[in-house]
Image (cartoon, rainbow, N blue to C red; front, side):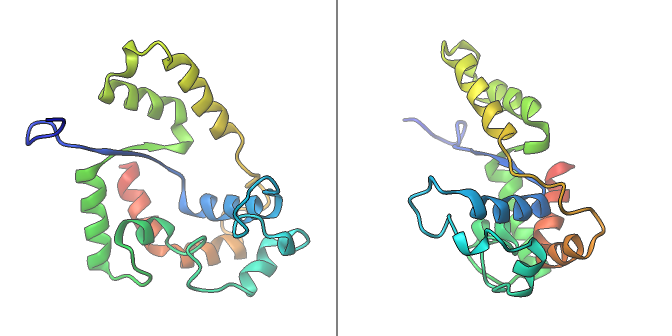
Length: 167
């Protein structure tokens, strides 16, 4: 038996700040020419600013509003009770890491899962670090700006969940 009451399965995940994730996703959609999925490359966004995009924004688009909550609870609108459910799921089912602390997070995963003895560990770790470095630019949106504040409003529950995860 692989899992039992003493050896329960656990997900592991890297969480990015919700506003940074939304900004990065927008820029990714502009440049993802290598993607086969037509939803990922959106050439119509190439000459659009993030502010213009948000003005045309579809409020149910899972790429922007409360992405983590949507993934965890499989729904589109949320209450404070839903937030508590998401916190509980994250606390009890996930080993979490932060993209902003990639090296520390990978070390945490290594320790938890006992990956230190794996001969491919250095190669895998290097690959994970390089993937994190390849993020899209976030410096076009300043904290406290109109765009940042709109994204904060759209991601209210994700921001609360992220604060819980960071603690």
